[in-house]
Length: 374
Image (cartoon, rainbow, N blue to C red; front, side, top):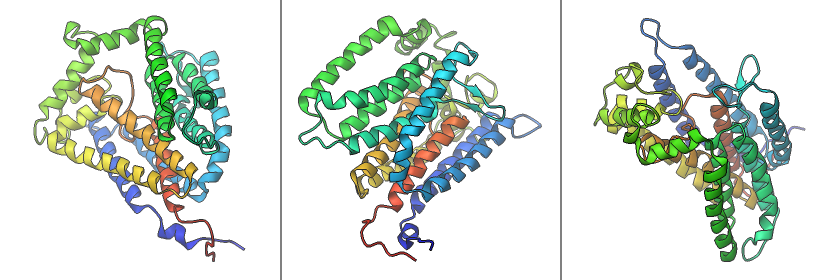
């Protein structure tokens, strides 16, 4: 007999779905404007992203049909597949603009580094949930999580993709702090982190990556070359003033002064056309969605669900913070998209699956014992 728990429907997360649709609607509106073709209307990029959004909603439905504990069992399988795909990109994929990031599937260019972040969250959540360490994690307790993080981190750095690799590292730090460290472990990791920053700057970063950071510190020092993106982004954001220039009326984007206006700098287009008021509305919706996600993590029925939900929120939160600070000139340009908003199929689908996992945890937040079935 088919068994269905009525409480799954009673606990369906309509709030998260509404916020996703609202943010997604604003993202598609912005993409339509930033890629609009005069006398023709919507571009092919808009229709592709609209299709990706529809596929993402379908993936959310699939995720909701599975208990998140079962998703955890698939985590290591997904992790292994992603590592294989990352290795494949390094060995067999032709470099585009100096980077080996995309696998051409014919109908879709897959960027394995995007789902790698979600796979990392799944395996770290499983690892931490299955390890009971009273008093906090010691250094030796972190050997497995460090190895799980280091493998995709190194492969992504070799592509090279500094921004995505940093997100993997930040996810590890965030989830590790969430499960609690001993003070001695925290001090050792902090010192090791500073050492890694120094070594990375001296020996691992490529020249153009170092130039990006130097440009962030002094964008006016090279305004026509490496500082151009930051300067144009700040002009676009500032020129929107209170209520913006209006839909399809942004000059920085439509006159092609602003590079990557539909990807890394998508929010700059929104700020120019909708101004401070529109930006405030978008950010309020966006960060309310993230706060709702934190509530899901805090109310999960078990340790694994709590860690998993927290990891999914950190995935979206840190990308959003880095992208927004990058657009406003507070961080160097590192190629981190704004989740659910910037154009990109791999990124959109990965973050929508993360939203689906959050909704899954919320739906199953009631006690497992004595569940009525029909």
